[in-house]
Image 1 (spheres, one colour):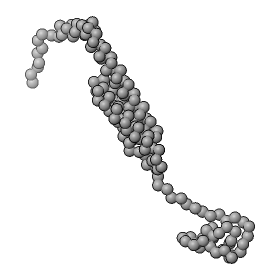
Image 2: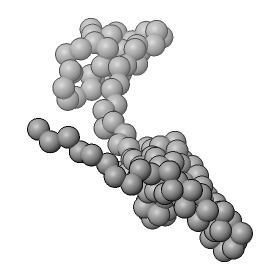
Image 3: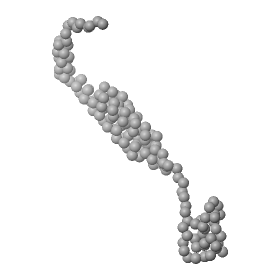
Image 4: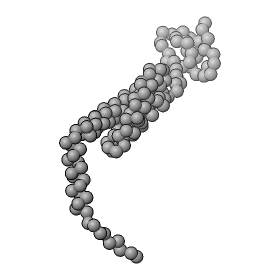
Amino acid sequence: MSRPLTGPGRDDPRRMEPGVDDRGVVDDRPVAVEERVVTKPARTSAAAAFALAVGTAAFVCVLIVILSPIGLVLGIIGLILGVLGMRAARRVGITGKGVAIAGLVLSGLAIVISIAFAAGMVTVLNNDSAVDRVEQQVDQMRDKLPDHVEVPQP
């Protein structure tokens, strides 16, 4: 004759061996056995999260033209963090592949835009006729300024 399983819940008839009821009578009916698996929630990779944050900051800096060199540096840092985040997302219990991809895309865009902006600036500054036109525009604007400006005193 079979006996119930030991451990917590041994008095629960659902925890008994299949085919044996609480009186020890054997029948052919299957008995439901409830099992719970306790798992820890998956964590997002810190590198992936930082890649997204740094990539976003790099993209914003590049769009603000004067901060383009900072955006280039941040883009390179975000690219490295994105690759590290992708590697970390392969491990069991760690997520963040999509976050790392978003960080990689934003960082890559920031780098491309920053390089394009730098190339455009170098091209304009190396073109003598373009520099002469800019100097003429500055001189014309300077000529339009008034000679004497009165500042009211309180």
